[in-house]
Length: 554
Image (tube, rainbow, N blue to C red):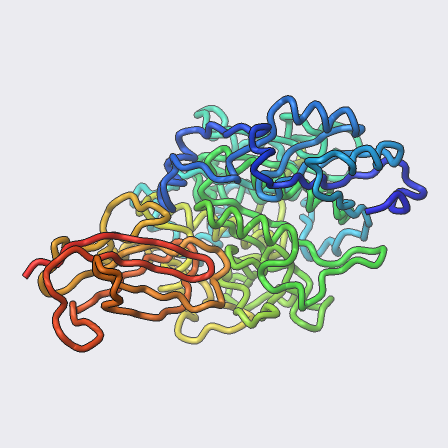
């Protein structure tokens, strides 16, 4: 980045990337996460062993950088970079700091908001009747969620993050969440404060709160006896990142910050009814870049997926805009459960974006009702209104995942996706418009059967062997750790104590959280039974190195 990038705009938001050399680690400190976060991390490896993603710059380093910028906003653990506002007068000094690896400008191009009929609420002229329980609850009936609520499963104990435009906390459907202390934390990444509601007259006139209020109501709202969100008993984290009425690339910057904030506060599921692809000023994510790992928001979702968070993302409302189907980032992410919109009869909405992604994966994954949904309104005089868009299908699926997670707390994100797909109405023949279709949440819960995997805390670097000692077979248990499966072949190998290779199995890498069980009949490569003794098992590829030790005793 050069000073030419600042012509005509003396102050610019940038990413300041810091070097990862060992000599600079003394300037970083390790984060102490809340207990809820550590419990989530424990499902994916040893939470006590901190990685570079758990370290942040100390005050000394922060002070050095702050002296050379207009404002330091926040540090991204996933990027190892500061979001900052800088002035070109200090650019040269800043780039000469030994710890600074590079500086990249954050784009600030703007495009108009999408058409109102697709994804913004159509306001009613009067309060809708609360006797219309059938129309309020139609999306839940389509997903077969009402019998799950009748079982007493409401998402209790599950922590859900919502990243959106803002939230009208005074609505009646949120009163029970707030009075019971289930609104755990909130943050406005636009104004850098702790208030996610409207703060200015412009906010009110632009309907800044409208979209996020509707989304939160669909997932967590509760107003007996008629209005129920899909997971009205869950805990909530509210993040405000999206500026209503514009599409600014700086929102991607704020989105990354919100992802890491949700990670810190122990989110297990995050609902994202936002999408990014094209901007004025010459920038656009091409279809080739919708490969599950290129866009910055997509990378952030994959990072969070590897830390045990399920991101439920809208597919988008751009099928008419792009010839390739209009899938948006971060809905292309490997770690995203991507949601399309259907009407009350289960027919795909005319606006619902779809894949495939550039690398050939089916998107969306699932669908839910996103046409003429009754939603909570941010207006002080109009309590409810109707809205359409994949934005309103997404929180329903996020709530469905929360119900399944409450019922089966040990499930990893990939297992939640798998179980929701298992009883969906198109699971036998998924396609790029519907994905696996509309899930049947009740069937997913009552028919769930564990795969026989040991109930134990797994280290990221260990392979568990059972039985141990083995005398007829040895079962190797481990969990895949990467959101983006490696293209390289992995090898599971067994060695004796002399280092001689006894057994080898080649396999493709699996999605993060997938539990692998591989059985060995104790026959060596010559077809003879392995002798009694101590053996080492190792899984190795360009991305993995896992080991275990076991005993064969005849």
